[in-house]
Image (cartoon, rainbow, N blue to C red; front, top):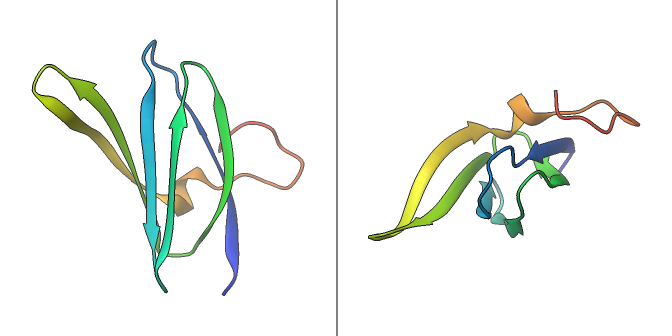
Length: 79
């Protein structure tokens, strides 16, 4: 299974939970602090969910295809 090099930068001033789910039972979950860059590899077809904690509990902020977060090798910034 080939994996895409991906990057996600938390541009908010709040901590977020990032969950990436993909084919063949791929799963990644990380806490990303404000302004932190998370670099990871994910299979083609994976989706990244960005969650925060609101007054009513967990809130899904955004869902992004991992292919949209692909970075070039050696590049430190998400595409």
